[in-house]
Length: 130
Image (cartoon, rainbow, N blue to C red; front, side, top):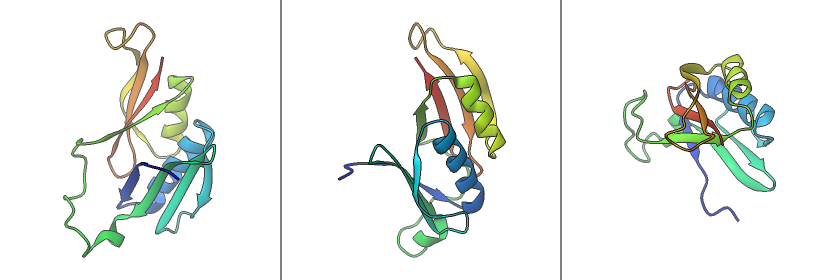
């Protein structure tokens, strides 16, 4: 059983599906377990454990008040990758918007490299290698 996993609430479900399906499948080795671009739900696993779930934001209407759509950067998804530049290219091919290019971050660790993107809904995603 998965104790904790991230679930992205997507306003642009099809765009976010394309982004995460490309990034999680081609870069992280994840497998789409359920869902397709038509929504309203999709999830990916890695080695039998939940990696990420995607839920159409409208499914939460009436359940709990949500913050207005758009980046608030209260939460960031971080994906450990082998090659930050290659992963950023895949993310961009699948609808991600690069906001900080791949760069070494020795202040974070001697071999740390990162790139930062926004998914189609504006959520902040960090690609990291070390």
